[in-house]
Amino acid sequence: MNTPAEKFTAPSLAMDIPTLIEFLAREFPQVAADFRIDTLEADRIVVRLRVGERHLRPGGTVSGPNMFALADVAIYLAILSRLGPVALAVTTSAHVDFMRKPAAHADLIATARLLKLGRSLAVGDVLICSEGSSEPVARASMTYAIPPKRG
Amino acid sequence: MNTPAEKFTAPSLAMDIPTLIEFLAREFPQVAADFRIDTLEADRIVVRLRVGERHLRPGGTVSGPNMFALADVAIYLAILSRLGPVALAVTTSAHVDFMRKPAAHADLIATARLLKLGRSLAVGDVLICSEGSSEPVARASMTYAIPPKRG
Amino acid sequence: MNTPAEKFTAPSLAMDIPTLIEFLAREFPQVAADFRIDTLEADRIVVRLRVGERHLRPGGTVSGPNMFALADVAIYLAILSRLGPVALAVTTSAHVDFMRKPAAHADLIATARLLKLGRSLAVGDVLICSEGSSEPVARASMTYAIPPKRG
Amino acid sequence: MNTPAEKFTAPSLAMDIPTLIEFLAREFPQVAADFRIDTLEADRIVVRLRVGERHLRPGGTVSGPNMFALADVAIYLAILSRLGPVALAVTTSAHVDFMRKPAAHADLIATARLLKLGRSLAVGDVLICSEGSSEPVARASMTYAIPPKRG
Image (cartoon, rainbow over all chains, first blue to last red; front, side, top):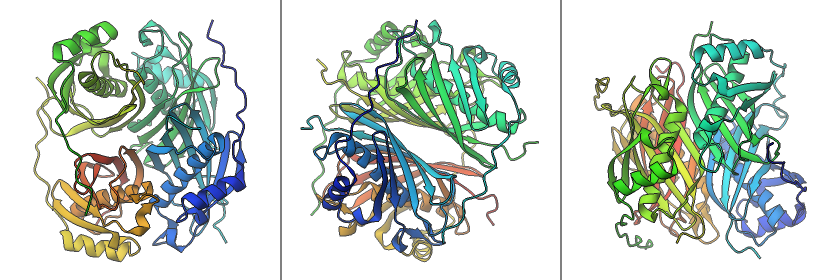
């Protein structure tokens, strides 16, 4: 009675971890060293913010803008991994819920997935935990415009 | 070096499916018949919008406000299931990304989880699919204020 | 030293209030009677939800989904008023902060403005008050995809 | 027929610009020098991000995390200006729409207002423009938890 589920083929990756890292280092030299890709799969990426003094607020916890940056980089890399290095996705909106104080001086681990990768719009969400904890510190939804030409 | 993960005990349920349904029917008689609880677990609830003519836009797809209502009810029931019927959580914010057109005339299935259930604030997120499809139609983040006294 | 402000010409209206109302009645017959356009200017629209029993939650206040619908209609009409009736803008995201309980049985007044009306993306925000009060009940940000061809 | 508008007394300020700046410099020494308060009124604050090399992405435009930080600081200062220096408001959610590329090397000007300053929750919104332009670069909604005791 209902429409059948759309055929679902697992997407393939256009870039691997070393290529993504290299791209990030070239395009965003100011911040690339802050991040590490722990895991890359067709529908999931795990990105780590290597927490240093410059990310911290008094009390030793990571600041909001740094969590925002982590969520943004994670989805950006997920889009790149699927579309390849020619894509220049632009962040059009970000929604972040801050739920708990991050653990002091712990790396932050962002697990991100793409929920939609359309011709002109990509949507992803991200869960951020302090390393060693399973309770989420923050959750983000990010939207990106994909430029018309990507070839 | 890092702070240890917080001890995590699986939360227990204060209300089961029939009690939740009864509560909904009593408190929200205008809309209760629209919804069905397919699954209830300690950290996950699946709520179905039984799609009827009144939910549809021209073309036979469910309107945005009805998807909003589904997300809201799903998290509201998740909070109730944990705190019991005395809690009168109030929606303080909602963020919804609409990603695909729902399948025409198909029920909508919302899978919701609580990411935080604090003393004064609850946060949850919801993924909505058309029945029979695994591609998400919408994704929502909802925030609720929990009244100070809940006993 | 800074880049000069972009030249700003006040936008002109492609549809007036009666034409917008007629369009709404034809395309969304289920809900059109709920709304009235109080004011239409090039950069601002005021839309009223004529509150009736069917919009109310127990206690006599308007439900969240109805406030969502009001915000959505207000920005949708603002886009139409600028692009004309051929445009079929699609809501891609909605963010709503619910801040106060609406006054019981009062109409809700939404004041909306377009912040961006690009070739493929429109962004607007909305402030909702109960009639007769200046304290906002809710605030919404809405995003729309504009279909490639609009002729 | 409708409930009367709530009595509205213009709120008074608990801190002025020099006191706010001093507080920021003491509590957030890493970032305080980035910001300047251009205007402070009871219901509006204008905060400037003094753009320097470290805020820029390739191409000379301010990065998303820096716009996020500007919106966050603007509302945080607005709350402080009303509650005084004892308040330690915590950001609970942020929603940002990025609408246009900032002008290269121009300061960013954030105009912020508090829409709600309740006992436990504050909500504000922010419009960000490049200096010298009236077209908004970004728009943000921010929510803060106010700690129970503020004395």
